[in-house]
Length: 159
Image (tube, rainbow, N blue to C red; front, side, top):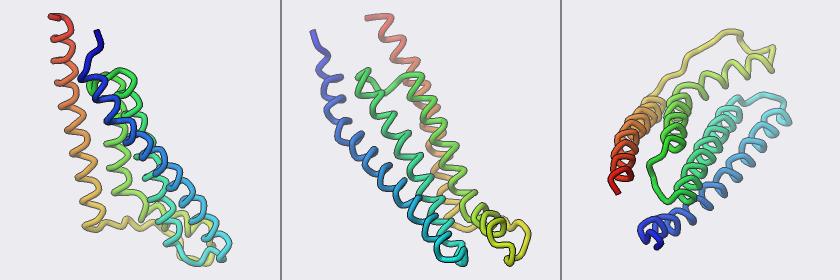
């Protein structure tokens, strides 16, 4: 006898998984274009690096999200150790995305453009704070998934 809830969950997550992989492909393309524009334009505008790094982070987010949805589609349950670990990685990446791209762009620009001032500047804005808080929230959700996994495990032992 097939589990109707699991089959329904698999159907609902399939389109989301496809969308995640399409967005990942587009963001990887944007990353490549931004770096190409930066290097072909004489390395004069570090904003291309910032946007390229954000595109790289979006690529990582959507790949991990797609893999989570693929796992849900395979097992028919949202609670598993693999999904919990992927959520934790996603949380760390989102926190890093809030803190790194602006500052890393300055370092990369200074490295490739010797005429630029040398040094490191940590850039922090409200946007960075919001992105980092979202990462913390994803981390909290991963801990809720640990509890859900334990409850699912208990139910499976009873049934």
